[in-house]
Structures are given as C-alpha cells and as structure tokens.
Image (cartoon, rainbow, N blue to C red):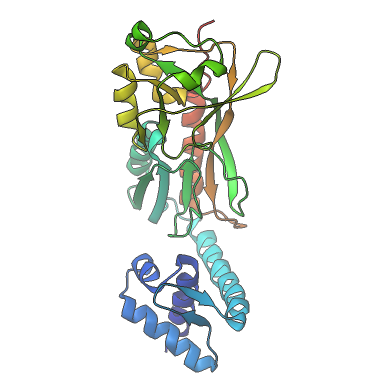
Length: 307
C-alpha cells in the first residue's frame, strides 16, 4: 500500500464529501480511491468513514485521524510551495472560481497571467451564487465573489467596495409612475435576481440614515445576468443590481437610475483562499494582478446616480 496515496485519498474524500468528487479532484477512478481508503482502514484496523448510498461521514476516530492527516498534507504542500517559490516561473494547476458578474474584470487578468506564466494550467470556473457555500469543497485555490461569506474559515482579501443601483429603461417610465421612495416599489414590476442576498426584499437607507425595506414582486426571477440586462433594457421592470453590470447601459442612456436620495447596501468584492501560512506563488501572483485590476476599475464600482 502506498501510504501517502491512501492518506491523500482519505483526506480528499472528506474534503470533497464523497468518493466520486475526490476521484475527480485527484484524476483517479472512484474504485481506486475506494480501494485506497479501504486499505488504509485495514492497515489501521479501524473504520474511518461511515458510508451510505448518499453520504460519507467521519467516525469519531476518523475525525481525529483526518485532522492529523490534513495537517500533514498541508505542511507537505507548504514545503513544496517554499521550494516552488525559488523557481523563476510558477507552474502547475491553479483552480479559480469566479462569480459570473465579475468575469469582465477577471478575464483580462487571466489572459495576462497566462501570457506571463505559460507553465501554469488555469482551471477557470464561473457560477451565479452571490455568497458561496463552502467554495473550496471542490479544491479551488482562489474564489472571487461579489460579497463576503458572513462566517468563513477562509482567508479573505477585499478587492473593491460597491453599492447597488436601482435602474430601469426610460420606456418603462413612459407607462409607469416614477417611484420616489422605496415605499412605492411594491406596485412596480421588480425583476429579481435568483440568488439575491435578501430574496424578494430591496434594502435602502433613507436621507436621515434610517434603514428601509421594500417587499417586491415581478414576472421574472433568474440567475442569468444576460437575461436581466435584456429584460431591464426592454422596459419590462426595475432592477436593483451592481453598477458594474449596467455601467455601459447607464452611460448610453439605455437605462436610468432611480431613488437618488436613498443609499443602497454596501458590499465588498473579495478573494477567498484556504488558510495557510504560506500562500502558493502562483496564487499570490494572480492575486496581486487582481488587486491592481480592481483598483483601476473602481470608477465602475463607485458609480453614484446623478442627483
């Protein structure tokens, strides 16, 4: 039995939540991973995992063993990274996770990063969740999100700060009254982002600093930014969205902002990565590029409606 392979298989099964996910992460077959973990259990003479058809969980002994093994593998990875840091050029796989709304900021960085470091294999994934649930479960090295998880063991670095903007097409206002306060919004057709932090509520702060909530409804709920842009531009309803998603449409007059006297929720674009004493060279280099990029683009994040 290759002891290190078995330890790695066991730790990845726990981290990934199952044998199939661990197999995909390690590039091996599910049978191989299962055999490695079984061999480890037989060698130790204990059961480390409780297996059902739908779930894999740690036994009490398995939990303690996992903590020790995870630390060992992390320290080995850090030792490798220290050695890699001495190389002129970083190399190896870098798994990056990014919210779809931020791709326009990330894309130029990734192309420049790959041009500078051609020996890095960038595995780039996008999704539509505003706040990720265990973003490192599938082994991502770095996750870029438009909002920070309320509670996370991950290291977070703020890349930029932003506020929502309420907008609609001029055509919508030709057939509907202009809202003057959040209290007017329930009678309007409000388009709702499927993964909104607050469901069917829009949150504001009035001129006196008092928080206000408006429960809204409409005929469109979607996680697609493309569909939300198209529907809003077509005059179908109101959209409370990040300004960087509509900055081009606001600049051309295709959309107009609403409720200029009411502030909206402030959020942060964050980079999340596992808590390690030694961050990998390739992740650090990409992170530095992202910080520079978001500093250059802050004008779209600070967008304030015309008063």
